[in-house]
Length: 222
Image (cartoon, rainbow, N blue to C red):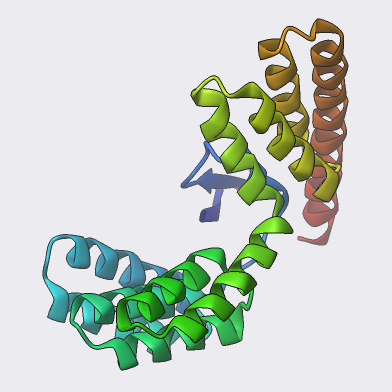
C-alpha cells in the first residue's frame, strides 16, 4: 500500500493508491525518494515476470534492491524469479535475504517451503514449515483472510474461530469484530451478532478520532 502527500494551493492532500484496504490505514511510514523509485522498479519487475520477460524482470528487481537493499518485496520477487529460472541457490539466497530483514514475512516463508520441497530437502522443509505455522498463528491478518474465505463458503463456525483469533491478537481492529458479527449472524446468533457489530462501530469511531488527532498533530508540525 502506497500513498503520496502533495500540497496544492497551500493545502496538503493525501492520495491513496490502495484506498480499499482499511487495515493498513492506521500504519503510516514516511518513505524516501529512493524507496519510492525502488517500488516502481519492483512493481515493473513483477509485471515483466508475469509477462514472461524474465531477464528484464531480473534487471528491474536488481535495480530496486540497489536503490533500497532492505526492500523485502524485491528480494522475495527476485527469489520467485530465480525459482522460475531453475536457479534454486539464487532463489534461496534472496528468500533468506528477505527474511533477514523481516523474519515473519509469511509469503517469503511459504516460498522457501516450496523451494525446499521442490529440491527434496525434507528436513529444511519441515523446519521452515513449522516456523511458518508459528508465524501464521500469531498474525491477526492471516486469521482474518482465512475467516473471509471460510465465510464466503458459508462455513460460519470455522470462520468465527479465525475472526475470534484475529480479534484476540488485535483488540483495536474493528474489521475483526465486524467479521465476528457476520459469522454470528450466519449462525443465527442475533444477540452476539449485534454485540460485535456495536463493538466494531465503537472501535471504528475511536480509530477515526485517533487518526484525526494524529493528522492534527502532524499539521501543527508542518
